[in-house]
Amino acid sequence: MQSAKQNFRVQLFITILSVVLFAAKMVAYYFTHSLAILTDAMESIVNVIAGFIGLYALFIAAKPKDIEHPYGHGKAEFVSAAVEGTLIVAAGVLIIYETVTTFFHHEPIQQLDTGIWLVAITAVINYVAGYFCISIGKKNRSLALQASGKHLQVDTYSTLAIIIGLVVMLFSKLYWLDKVIALLVSIIILYNGYKIIRASLAGIMDEADMDLLKRLIHLLNKNRRQNWVDLHNLRVIKYGSLLHVDCHLTVPWYLNIHEAHLEIDALSELIKNEFADSIELFVHTDGCLDFSCGICIKQDCAVRKSPLQQQLEWTLENVISNQKHQIK
Image (tube, one colour):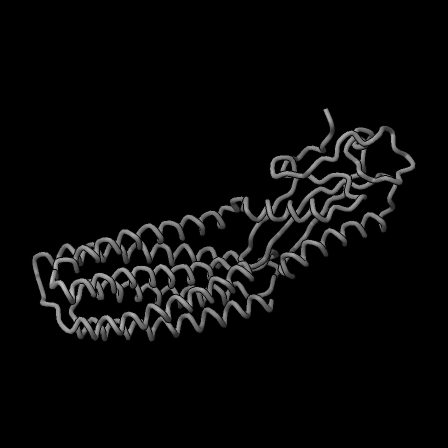
């Protein structure tokens, strides 16, 4: 819950900042009448709208579990990211439209030096805010915060491209570059909007996070206990900042319920120490069978039927399988 509250505070700060930066870019456009700067300002409108949507989504996601939502409200973050990605794509399309229409209605560009300074300041602030937002988002596994941070940094890159173009125009007087820059930036915006939508849909559809699974499997291999004979049917589902992990853990068949539960506690503590407290872990324990002896690394087993043949390293392929492992 603490991470959810932190996510909300960060998003609130980003939303307020987006309003200020949008105002600064509109002032720059007022001075210059540059289509490229207007393009940048239009993208900032999306930042503002998406910021408020993300704020509401994080407010919902921070709510505790209830009878109707036994897994919490974290999925709201995925919906927020999908809406933000859609708005980014819409901004890209609108920028292309504005660029095409200006071919027929030209307005002279002026005071580029003033515009460059104003836009440069917003670029620096955007990048720092985006980096901070992504860092907190990764720490708390908040897709909404990461989407906002990436959007801010994409805004920075597009702003830098615009600044370079404005500088070239300032010295070369090639004002037709204004439209070219606007078109290029719109393509970048469309691509990044698509990526955010793709990531959010993956979360909504419970698509497996392979990088997260590999990181978890590496952790388990590195800290494997002798009583952890085997591990299979491992699954991880994201609910916003909450990770729901379930698996089947094979332990020696002669352990009593209390002893088996101690092994589950050790597994749970290991995962929580690595991935923070926002973990929900469900472990089904299986007793080992005769064929398990071939992969069992327990050295003081008094009922072993056959010697260790091979220490089986858990991999992505064999751990997500629903079958107990054995040497064939």
